[in-house]
Image (tube, rainbow, N blue to C red; front, side, top):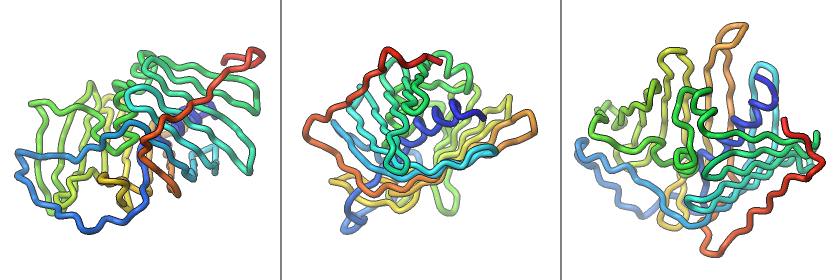
Length: 252
C-alpha cells in the first residue's frame, strides 16, 4: 500500500468514531425485542474533535494528530499534523474527496464512483458521515436479518458484494463492532468501538481499533489504525472549513 492510499484510508477511517465529555451514567437502558431492533443513532448539526492516530501497515508506521470538523449532510474537514507541522488536509464533500499534501505540495481528488468500484462497496458521503458517528453504514431494509448470541444482537446486512455484521449491545443499543467481508476478493475489515462516553444526550466511542485485511502481491496484508480522541463536541455554533488548493500544487 503506497502513501497516497494510506492517507486516503486514514482520512476515511479517522472519522469513524467520536468521543465525548461525560461517562455513561444515570441512563436507563432497556432490552428490546430483537425483531424491533432500535439501533441508537446520533443526530447533530456541527461536530468538532481532536484525536491521536496510529497507522501501521506492511510499509508504514505513522503517528499523527488530527482536528476534525463536520457539518451535517454537507462536509467533513480534517487537518493532520505531526510534531507541530501541518502535513495534510482532507475535505470530504457530497461529490468528492480532496486531499492536500502540504509537505510535497501536491493534491489528490477522488470521486465516489471510482472509489466504489475500487473497494467493491458503495462509498458515498452519507455512509462516511454515518461512520463518523458510529451509526449504521447501510440503511435498514426488509431483507436485513437479526439474530442474537450470548452478548449481542447481530444485524446482518448486504451492500453489493459486501456483507456487514453489526454487533449491537442489547443494553445500550449502540454498535460495538462492525465486520465487513467482500466475498469475491475475501478482503475484510473489522471496526471495534471502546470506552463509550456521553456528549449531550448521545453516546460515542472514545477509542477504536480498525483492522483491514486485503490481498497484495506478497499475500494477505494487514493494516491497523488506532484512534484515541481527547476532545469532541456537538456544536450549536456554525464552524468554518478553511480549504484551498494553491495553484502551484501539482494534482496527482
